[in-house]
Image 1 (tube, one colour):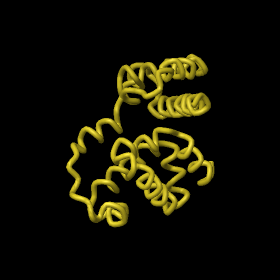
Image 2: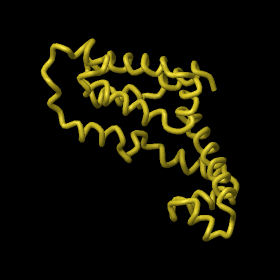
Image 3: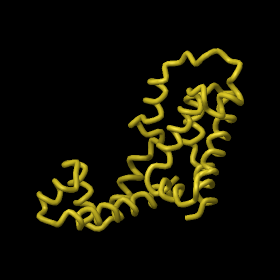
Length: 168
């Protein structure tokens, strides 16, 4: 995946624009989105690739909140300089950004479909990991080495992630 592919993903995924809309007003959301994308453009390609493999949306959301709320940010100096200080409950906004409730009603079906694509061993590893919460506990319960459990989970996550990206 290249830097251009990552930005195409950001552009196509509505969650990124929604993060800006949750924090800023309608008139400010587009400007905020553009400023955050400019910040991401300045990142080295290897850092972007690392983020795209794990938590690009979380990183994006943190930048959005920082840019909008911080009086030292480029966005604040450029667009909000003359406005009154922020008087919003930012905790509610942050909670909405990191909400556990999926926006897509079909997400449950998509995840179930992705799990069916896994082989039996990987599916069981994912289920045990969800139940027990750590690779070490899965390793102890199954008597499989921790590195083997970790590798199986990483491979399973890749399959699930690629399936979910295709369904979006």
